[in-house]
Image (cartoon, rainbow, N blue to C red; front, side):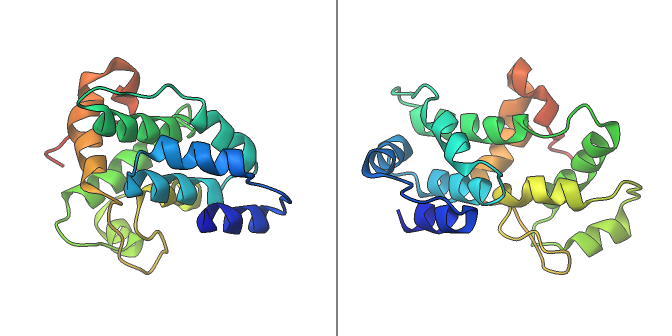
Length: 173
């Protein structure tokens, strides 16, 4: 609730989120704090957080045993699905940067990644996209993935589901 109010204030939205949206948000989260953190981080960088949240809240829910995992995987896919996959340099930089982050056992800075990888594309757009999925995405600060479920999604689940294969990272990176 506080996070959504802060996003609304930063976006100049008045009277949002209302009680109904807050209830939908709480119910949709099903108590998954990682879902709440990822959504709020994602919304902070969006030009229409109100519309984007509404879109996320309207997505179908999973009520089976694997519902929580599937819910977070679907969230990752929704966030990543809005990125610039038609841009080859973007996609290549994504593979290099995210692959390096996943392969590192300790947090690593973008500067360190750029020192060990040959990346010719500008990274500012990619890093702004990655922000909701990382604990930090400042150039000089070490960063790591938001949650182990993202590692599982990118290295295992994305390889299994055709519509997610664009996001897949080779687990041997």
